[in-house]
Length: 363
Image 1 (cartoon, rainbow, N blue to C red):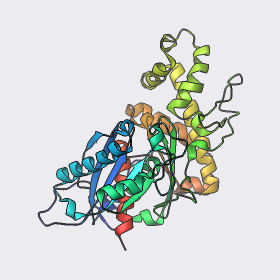
Image 2: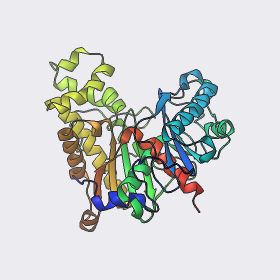
Image 3: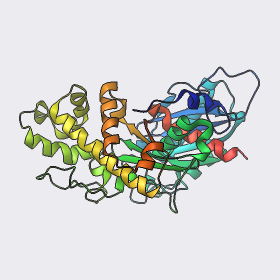
Image 4: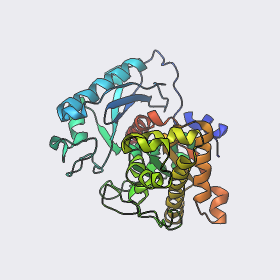
């Protein structure tokens, strides 16, 4: 497992990097705000123009997305003001706001016409959340989806001052499988903003699945994509139902499948055989995904994030080592590429959004 290099961590304070929170000086300075909108909570952070993170902990408030756009956009403003208060700076110092939400959405922040898990109300379908936030805040708003924002933070956090000259691919394992591709320090968005949707890359699964295991299906309608295996939804819909047929006396067999799926990780941390076989399939799928990335983008680094990486250290390290073992790199690639965990994942989205805003205001 690759640790965060001390030299790279020290370099975060220089141009192109970010550094951890320090007490704000008395002199006013320009800042950007990063805001990460989730299904239940919205959190925010503040970064000054030198790249210093002024908030060292979670600053969050209810997202209000289930109450509709008006309430949710008001909540965005409220959490921004809360973060500014924590950072000890005024609203007048804000030059731009970075905003992220779960996808699918366009590169400009227009939510999918088909709705989404966290934006299920019809009022959200096709809603331009970036423009609405910009009108409410009266500030420039730069939009990314949440996985891209976390990927940008992981990239910046790891490479520091070298970030503009490096590339990376991130896989964020959650309810779905989010992803992000960063090239030369910037998120690759694509023509419509849907680049880096790594969860919906089709994978060859023949030697990952058991001989009698059904082909996993994704909620998007695909069969055998990465998310159908490496996500909580993949566990719920595909992996756990199969493995319970192999372990019918397992304690999870008596629970509703959705509840059991959320409990699998705790069994994995305790070394449970069935749980480890489930997570081995997930890790192998991510390794297969990274193998495709190696032949498509040839990145400097591969990052893994999500709930599985927030587990007990021994389990997290086992999972990452399994991903590394399942990633087939050429000798030249293996000698230069690195693998690491997405740092500060609960704050990575907001921080990545702030970094995107910082990029937007820098010459």
